[in-house]
Image (cartoon, rainbow, N blue to C red; front, top):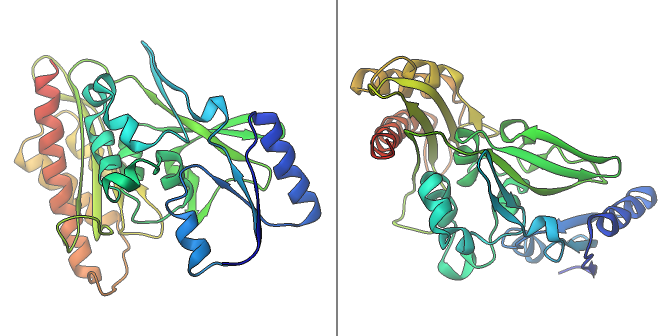
Length: 293
């Protein structure tokens, strides 16, 4: 591991000061929310010196608010704590399940939604689930704060939209209306603790007759960045989310994907699997929406 410095600011302003100072001097700096990706990188492929800015002591990154209209999840809240929140699990079960897929119980005691997103892996499990649930990034910067949809945040493999003097404060989600359900599924070669070959998150809302009135679909590990697939959502709208509609949504996910071949799966395999995952996740989301009536 190369030489590095460590600071743990207790306010947004102090964190921004550190980031701006490093940006002016051209020194490398990285924010740490959970560290489950960053610390591995420091000991492996990326040992270059830098300053680590630990954001876990900042109030805004540790806040969890479940309001009547909106849910806010701080960027430094461990997924284990999210999994223990009964109200959040009832409202966004697919999102919480996605977070619960990251590593072991020990890892989940540190891993965060914010860190998983900022790492910008195409195969991140929580990102498609956040896209499906209309997640919005709340970003602190020298000029105040700004917001952007989760699907716009990852700009390339391992690259995100943050400027040098910015860091992720948290994530906002609209509180799901009645008869809404979400689900996230992935395929991995092993039974657990592996990287997704493909992943898909689906959220949908049904009216009182069971017809879909709103839908969102996010896919991962099948393109350089996680994607929102509008064509898949459109295939579900106005239907009872039956087999034909789910099949059409799966076809749309295949069409939107642009995967690579590697030791875990070929292009053709990933394109087929993502369609299967969309169909299955959509069926689970439908069942949850019917149960939430």
